[in-house]
Length: 406
Image: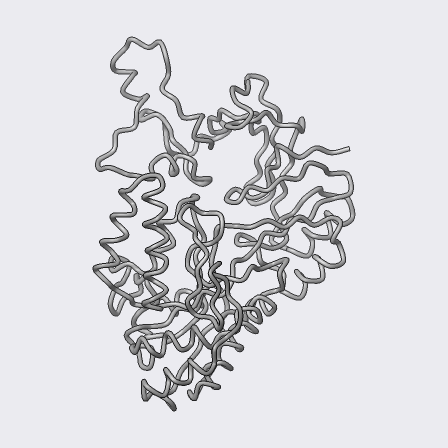
């Protein structure tokens, strides 16, 4: 749903009906306009039924309407003859007369359907895909380069460091591991530049408040880029901490097992006794987030629900930490009331002031080092020979209504 589609109805004099034309907030929400555009949330009048209505499609205001829906199998959209675009930027008209969307749990079959002309597009890799292995992703990007479109997505992957578990309860150790990680190698192990972009901070490129910065690098540059690991400085910090020889378990999941094993290798070089543990999804996140398990370090990350910087700091807020609980959403178990106050101030700010505050918050998290940012995943779209005008939105993914076919 596009924000511009949510407008008060004009010309009504009935006060009882006008009450449905407005949204009443219980408390101020600086990001309310962004939430109206959530892909998985929809605004309805107060009197609208919220349960399923058999045989009746949900209401819509866009250039297409649902004409067929088989749960778990397919959806068909056809042109909405009542739609008129009031703004090419806010809600452009669509090009295809119909869009058939097939649902499949077999990623190899999805790719084969596009390669053999039975379908026109599939998201083969990205934050909401990723069922193919990294080797399959790489092969696809190389073998079908003329049919592949890659784009950035609002996400960052990092290794959380449990600040309440030895040896990461010492900030010198957390900074040391940040210095020791070869982020360029991390990108290579995550599929290469076509599938991942090097990251040294919490906020991904393209979001408000993003300002390139990287305090954990050898030969720092004014531009804030990462150049190389600084093992000498890392080892000095470890020596000062007196934590050499401590036992560390590094947790990961199958798709990024090589990334996780490399992190374990770095920790061994720093003098720790390391064991790498790989768990299947979704068991992995259930385990490492559960603060009763006291996971020391593991691969995790964040995907933005809407294009604002605030949610990237949620995993480091005190409110997200639940001690000895399965409900914990802060795997680093990091809590800093000063950071929480800075978060609230950034959320309340506007314009350039807000951007500056989010950038400062990014630097503050990096200084405390409850995490090691390593890469931003990219979206890979595979298209057929006949498809043109393929466009990708950073949050929504492929804009199917802007595709055309020959």
